[in-house]
Amino acid sequence: MKRWIVLLGVGLALLGLSPEAAATEVGRGRNFGLGVAFGSPTSLVAKYFLSRENALDFGLGFWRYGNCPGNDNRPFCDTYRPFSLVSFNMDYLWQEPIVAGATASLDWHIGAGGRIWVGGGDFALAARMPVGLDLGFRKPSFLEVFLELAPAVYIVPGVYLDLEAFLGVRFYF
Image (cartoon, rainbow, N blue to C red):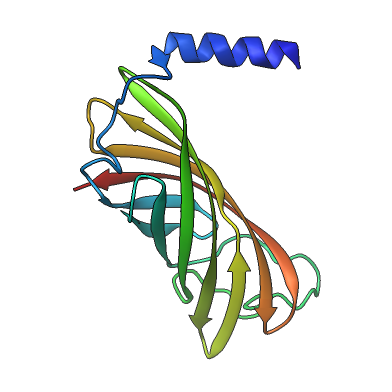
């Protein structure tokens, strides 16, 4: 454990981060961002900051890839075709800074929301809880890179758990 703390400290020192300075305009003047997230599903994403600590996060996914394991009643396993499915998610996020410095800032977020899948006459509904890291930069101050894991509990058409993972980028206006 001590080794991980030392490695984290060295990594942050190399990035030139300190807890005092503000490094980015994301959520502090530039409140609306658009971008793309690669993962499950790959999506067009948007984020709107309601305040420095709260935001609405949206995603429009166009496919779900991978093999469905066995016969576990997951939606769309029998009808999977790339680009034949569309998903929409919306989450309410609580965001807190971890460190901010002269060149970059690192925040973490947790949220609650839902996802809807439609396509080929099928429909699925899930509750989700995203947890992630957001990296903002001083130059360019309009850029945010994020990593997110979102456990999801599908309730329609059947009950099962899923884990969604994303790596993405947003450009703020």
